[in-house]
Image (cartoon, rainbow over the protein chains, first blue to last red):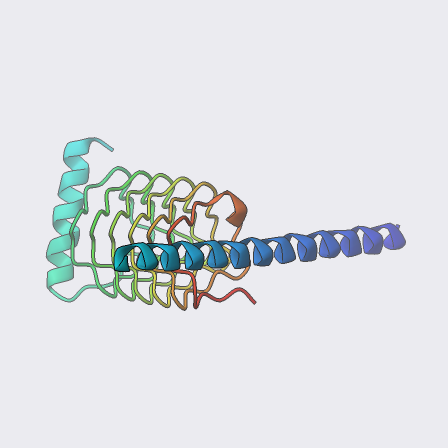
Length: 47
Length: 146
């Protein structure tokens, strides 16, 4: 019983970690996209 | 609560705020119109702001932890250094809002609209449903996600 609970807890922790990492990646990607878009806009306005 | 009663709540809140009162924990402001209101440093912990209009409001340093901000209109609002820990921002409109140094830890941002918002140095650690929020054109360069 306790073993099952521990197992469940570990799985939940692992899933939370995956979700956290995915969120981090998503944010990083958004940061990069927005940065590039901003640079492109600046470039266009200078031309 | 009827719209007329809500108008009265808003009027009383603004009056008390102008007298220096800052503590409005758990207040019911569902559907209230607080657009353009100056509410700097207000304590709205656990408040019901469901579908409230806070467009262009000054909420600098406000504490909105655990507040229900589902469908709230925060377009262009100033939330600099605001605390939004565990707040529910499901489908909230935060376009062009200033969230510089805001704390959004554990907040639910499911389908929240952050387009063009300033999230520099904002803390987005463990926000819920982050992937479903719209960050197009938002300033994210210095935001935190530990």
